[in-house]
Amino acid sequence: MELDSIECVPSLDLTDEDEIHQHHHLHHFPSVSKPHAATTTNNNNNNNHTNTVASAFHTTSVHELLECPVCTNSMYPPIHQCHNGHTLCSTCKTRVHNRCPTCRQELGDIRCLALEKVAESLELPCKYMSLGCPEIFPYYSKLKHETLCNFRPYNCPYAGSECAIVGDIPYLVAHLRDDHKVDMHSGCTFNHRYVKSNPREVENATWMLTVFHCFGQYFCLHFEAFQLGMAPVYMAFLRFMGDETEARNYSYSLEVGGNGRKLIWEGTPRSVRDSHRKVRDSHDGLIIQRNMALFFSGGDRKELKLRVTGRIWKEQQNPEGGACIPNLCS
Image 1 (cartoon, rainbow, N blue to C red):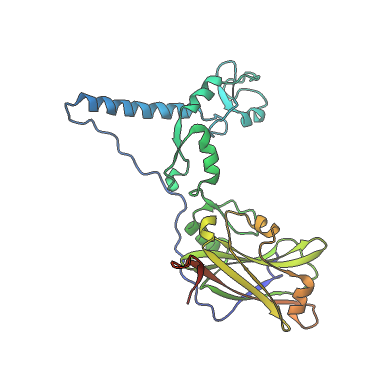
Image 2 (cartoon, rainbow, N blue to C red):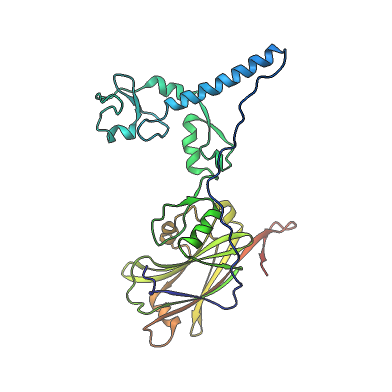
């Protein structure tokens, strides 16, 4: 985005930005102390302890066998092997041009059926165990779970570049503030003015991002212009920095207007699990056609001047009637 193409001017009635403390997004596995030999005369206890340790070593060694020597990821069927018994995953088989990376022999089309069978008997923890996931899965179910695990890291919600940073929410908030220089505000209401000098020249991904902190959560307010068919449109929408199930606890409204007319949008914020492009392309937000935006701007229609206001509230369950009632922040 050209930095001088859209100017975001926060209203004066917003409170000062809360200090956001940075937390690192990677958590380490808890240290496991080396088991000590128990001083006991109970042979059954000693045998059980020995069997447990042996089983742990067995699982670890088999898991190492299932690690692809090229990409180091876990291997899933079909698992390939060369004539000398060296294995690798099907993805890497094409990358090494059908040559074994260990002995350089031709791979052919030999499947390692024995290793595939052994994998069926394994149960392994989720790879996000260090981030809090307590689940243990059969080997072949583990991969599917990890693509949907609630403890998996979040992608950076910054829309202006393909930022590869991932982490938990506190880490990403600090990352947005420190690395992307995103405006941070506290409070559940917003009043922003967006200015563009030449609204008839709109490039894709002309955008602004502001982060709001309220109800102890963080929300990303996006405003952007993009080409829809032959004409540009302007769109504003909110994303919740958390999972979809949590996002459903909140609602928001957006309003834009001028010259005695106004448009109002109400909806539920989308989770940042949904990419910025996915939300934008689904048109899940306040959309303003160019002609309407220029009408709201007034004047000679040569400059875009839009004031977008809105608020965020939390839905609370009414204990008597079961209906949701809004909980507005002060």
